[in-house]
Amino acid sequence: MAEIKKILCAVDFSDYSSVVADYAKTVAKCSGAKILCLYVAPSMSQYVGFHVPPSSIENFVGEIVTGAEDTMNDFINTNFGDLETEGRVVTGYPAEEVLEAAKDEDVDMIVMGTHGRKGIDRILFGSVAEKVVKTAKCPVLTVRPE
Image (cartoon, rainbow, N blue to C red):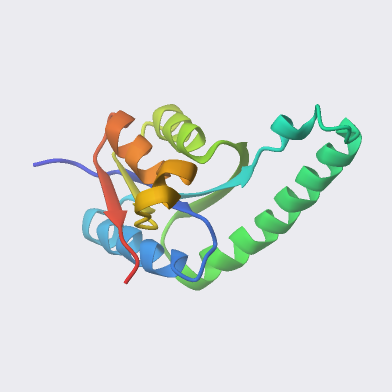
């Protein structure tokens, strides 16, 4: 029987994130797993060459991360209650950061939402969930919006 000791729950703090968290919580309760709840703030490094001072970009990203850390604490208290849960906020590209955290933390499962984009939206924005599913070394549970 597969052992699930650590779950990475990737969230974007949308209204749907609580549904994703509920799936991670359910699996954790059944298996006794710890949860790593991860939010990836957008990297603004691609804008450095657009005549915007790098210090302005760094300050903006810093403010996003600070706000996300506060939101993460509230999110964990609201959604995970008494489960052993660590919240983490990182910056970068979501798929890469989720995969890196999963590898570094040696997680047994990733739980994440998928926006279910189709057509041109999918071509333009890609699919973070698809990239994670195709590349992850552990099982990935994707939760689709209703």
